Length: 304
Image (cartoon, rainbow, N blue to C red; front, side, top):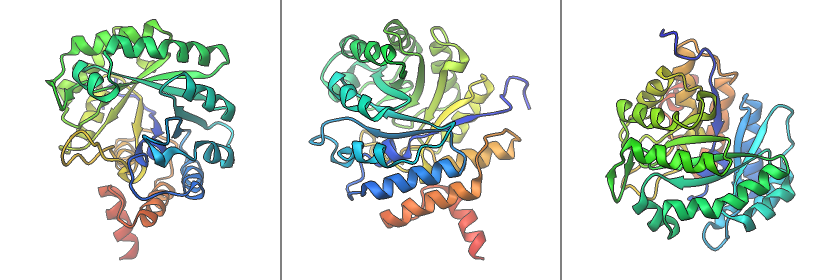
């Protein structure tokens, strides 16, 4: 194993928020709370729980206060939430998250289509949110979308990623996610996006967030590991599809990432069996199998 590959990896499970937000079937708060409980029992130390957006746009997250209030918080676990604007932050701060997430796109076309403003304008909107969070001791993470490809622009140059990273750093964002939003990235392209981000953030402040549309998420994770990246977002049971790419399978499954890392001798602190049970729990509620090859293979092996 290369000396640059970290011996330990931290996984941030985004299933309860990013994974469930586009589900058409209403998921009760009690089920979301139980999912969070199962994830932390499996050893996850960072969980993205919910978002504070208008229920008109994301009805699945309308129960954010109920979910946050219902979690039996575990010492050593950080709970993060998405806050798209100052109004969202003011609602979120009542629930005492450890971290808020703001977002920006490396693609101008995506920014215009998604939030009706330029990249620079989106960062200006987030500046007061970041300032307010830091003022009360809440950490801030920036999600950088479309860092290798965009459904409207196609391939994204690393210079655009560096530009976005610099803007986020400039308003006080403490760490960032390099996200392959539509899952078109391949290892070298992902490495170039990460290298561009490292112009503004240290290796400890950068995480990978890969979608598996073309089956490249684990390869891209390995490419990021080779650069020393040790923080990653993933989603239990592979929850979450990408509405911007036809056929996109969404987030890489946490189970698949853990299986690969364990096979490489990399420590995660996660109990794979308990994680698989968490994925089976939410998948059963949604009426389908987990979108994870490792989980389905190991579940089949259990029954066999």
